[in-house]
Amino acid sequence: GFALAKRVKALTPSTTLAITAKAKALKEEGHDVIGLGAGEPDFNTPQHIIDAAVTSMNEGHTKYTPSAGLPKLLAAIVEKFKEDQGIDYTAKEIIVTNGAKHALYTLFQVILDEGDEVIIPTPYWVSYPEQVKLAGGQPVYIDGLEENEFKITPAQLSEAITEKTKAVIINSPSNPTGMLYSEKELFELGQICLQKNVLIVSDEIYEKLVYGENKHVSIAQLSPELKEQTIIINGVSKSHSMTGWRIGYAAGNREVIAAMTNLASHSTSNPTTTAQFGAIAAYNGSQEPVTEMKKAFEERLNIIFEQLLQIPGFTCVKPQGAFYLYPNASKAAQACGYDSVDGFVEGLLEEAKVAVVPGSGFGTPDNIRLSYATSLNQLEEAIKRIKTFVENKM
Ligand code: PLP
Image (tube, rainbow, N blue to C red; front, side):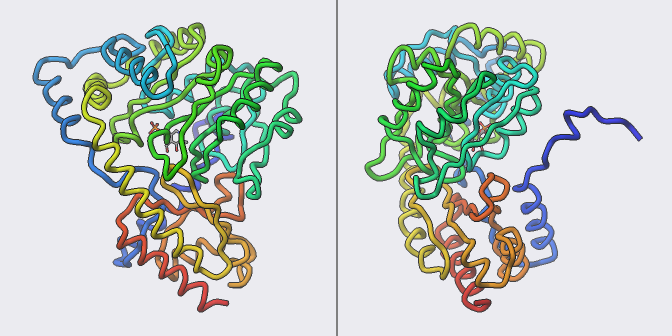
């Protein structure tokens, strides 16, 4: 056969995909499976965004754009940062990419040399370690402990930094936990990064989905030094329900952005032109749909969180943002006779016909991730099924 490159052989397949494939197979056999694995909002893209994209094509905007993105989109993003975070970026400090995922991928490619370390707090979004490894880097994990709301402390960060540390990833609100770092926590972590010259990669893709009294703060808005030390990653996928459009961006140090733009010019050329026109409308048009979607998520969260806590053996930190619940299911798994939560998740799918994602894929094998990006009816039915499943096995 064909000999694949070493870097590809070292890639770990996505755990979310394995469970999704199994759920799909069961569905095709005619089983009534409820999927709580989704990583995308269940709403349509707002109509004015779709209309703007269609109009742009009819007006003939169907050609290449500059590699860093359309000037009009860059201007809209500059404006967004001013309004939401009070940060002044110039267009030269921003690159538009094919989704936030590709912003991260490109970033690691331009900042990492062989053996450079990137600190990744657990639980982490599944693609961080793989992307770091693909760039020749070495992931270094810090445990975000459940008793600290899955967040890392300044002491933990200090301890993990070595001469090889290039960057640390902060994802707030977090996928999979939904937790947010406060301004004070971010400031303290930031001071350590400034002292030790560690780049901060701040993944803020769930910025717009923050509930109750909680407020999203970007570490880059806390001081001019922190702005210079941080690359913000964001995009319209989650905020405007545009996951399929593939528009994200990175903002920060001009030289890093220039290097990313250079790499993009040889790999993607530019993010899809039509999708960029959609993103311009997303930022320049009404933000009412964003508020509406957030309200729907928050309502669901408040209803099903209480129901989730009724499942014997489940404990859960209440999420402050994003659209995931991340309960600890280790006691329930044990009580049901499983030797791991992974086994519990499989049983849940096969017998109760509910698909959730095992925490092992996020680096914390005692937990499971439930997405509430699905209708309240389906959510309530799923929780009922999990509860019955556990009660019958105990
Ligand atoms: N970062 C986090 C934490 C995510 O959960 C996701 C999507 O699941 C992304 C980045 C990627 O978003 P995009 O669809 O814009 O590539």
